[in-house]
Amino acid sequence: MAGPIVFALLLLMPLGGLPFETRGAMGLLVWMAWWWITRPVHLAVTGLLPLPVAAVFGLAPMGEVATSYSQDTILLLLGANILTSVWTRWGLDRRIGLASLLGVGTDTRRQILVWFLVSAALSGVLPNTIVAATMIPIVVAMLRSIGIEDLWNSRVGTALVLAVAWGTSAGGAATPLGGAPNLLTVGFIEESVTGQEFFFLTWVMRLAPVTVVIVLVMFLFMRFAMQPEVATLPGSKDYFREELQALGPMKTQEKWGLALFAVAAALAFGRPLYAELVPSLTPAFAFVAMAVASFAIRTRQGPLITWDYAQANMYWGLFYLFAGGIALGRILSGSGAAEAFANALVPYAGSGGFTAVLVFSLLTMLLTQVTSNTAAIAIVVPITISTFQSLDLNPIPFVYIVTVIGNCGFILPSSAGGPAVAAGYGVNLQTMAVKGLIASLLVLVTLVVLGYALARWWPAFGVA
Image 1 (tube, rainbow, N blue to C red):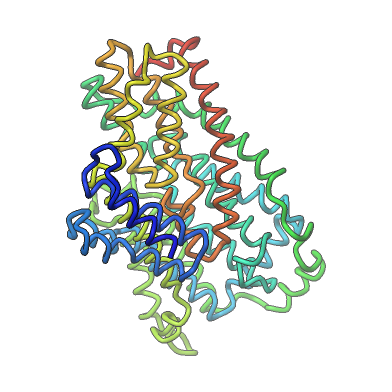
Image 2: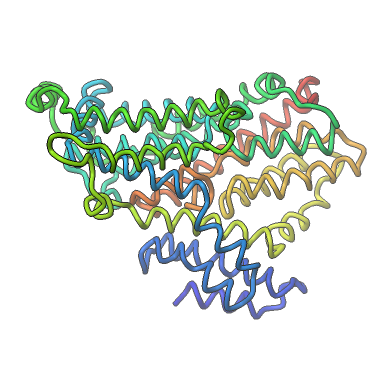
């Protein structure tokens, strides 16, 4: 009852004259965060809360809330889930798991750090949700191959999946291609600051070094803060090699499953190459197309996969949890709750010194954790630009700083695509919240100090 009670209290309290919808959105945020962490109901059920709450209390237009549950990203996750179900049916997941263990080794720390670095590197040029949706199923397949099914109660399982999720957040600001928050920032700079095209090379020269620092900080955090219950994963290299050999050569069905997933991933990653030729074939529909093909392909043993098998192996909760995070972000933005919180801190901008960097960084980090990285950037960057322009100060250094911070969602499933996908696969959300909070504070301190130093002593950091 704690979640709905807090919601009711925030809904009824005056709170400085804030509108009813704003107070309700704040209450819904607390309610969902509480239920996601304490799990009195399934995570997917909490993800459905925005629908009835927004409908009953009128917190936001239902058209906007309801469409959160039919986002392209949901279709991408659906397609990826079907394709990896093909792996499970024919044993490809076990083959991939054994090969991964042989390649990286069974040392759990090495596994965590390698998955983190690979995910961080990929997220620099690809949207973090796509990287997470592609990489996490492979990690889960590896864990299943050694008998780890329940991620919530497995510290090593949770750590490995979080390594991918947090890697996608830490590396996301390296280039504008890292996701929607970065492209939003580019649009804001072009429209409100420079009035001309913002070159991607400029972004990389300014923000890639900052991103490398964040990845290094998170690398050290993952190395010393994540404490899996075992030093090595079950089995030895000889055992894994024998098990892999016992599987024999790849079956035709395995080759089809691997090929379909590889084609979908290649289409998603190579989107810029054909975007003008086939503008509607976004990564989501590429994965769905390959998923549909998997039902149509026949082998000597019958269809590659059947709907009965696919739906029995579907992570339905993942879809509703992810959509719930998107819906929550829309309600917070549409009701004015996020903007009200942001506006309360605007007067602290001062003369653009250390206090301004600290305040706007803290604001962005908070909003990123409780809404989403895209929503946080959509709220904070326009406020940052207008605030510093009104003070006759160059807003660009502050925009760069808040954009990097805006990519760093670690705590809640609603904070970024990586944590949302990880939550849907069943990682321990208490671990994600507690460790994510520590990681957020560590990154915040690093970026405040580094950002202030760059803004003050590196003139080029203020150039767009």
